[in-house]
Image 1: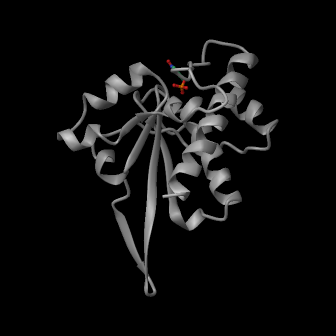
Image 2: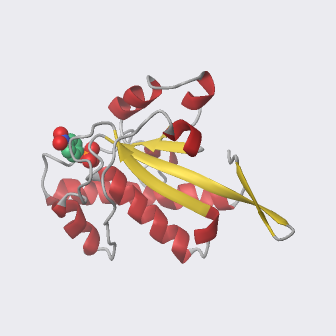
Image 3: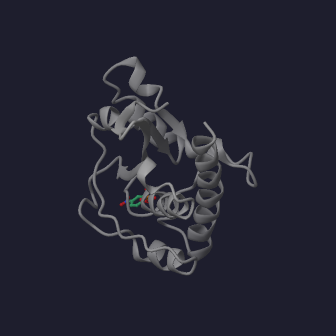
Length: 170
Ligand code: 4NP
């Protein structure tokens, strides 16, 4: 899965390069970026990962995450403070795993593939769910209330924990 090899002394190190995608890059994907980053830090594996997020659209480019997601995340100890940006096809070259939140995202990203191998990098984040296995999308909380933001965070935490396990047991 990893294609980014770095020489570190005598040891050849593989860095996992993960991009989280949602529609606006202000609710779900910056939360996934922040959750995954903290889990990686807590596992002592910061050097082994490069984590980012992006949106299908550019409506919120440059903005901090939605204040409701920042607030719900802060209650769990997260600081979501990335700046929104739009996905570009060049991201297929920069990342080896592209995790999308819903089927709309999947369609919108796969249709931008530059070659068939690009699409093989795209997965649903829900594929990694354990506790909430059977849930097939991380629903967009943008037009919802606190409970919708909390549900998105529950799913994101569940999936990111398993994603980290998979990548660190390779
Ligand atoms: P996200 O939520 O995809 O989880 O960041 C949304 C944020 C903004 C919009 C839609 C979804 N919007 O239409 O502006």
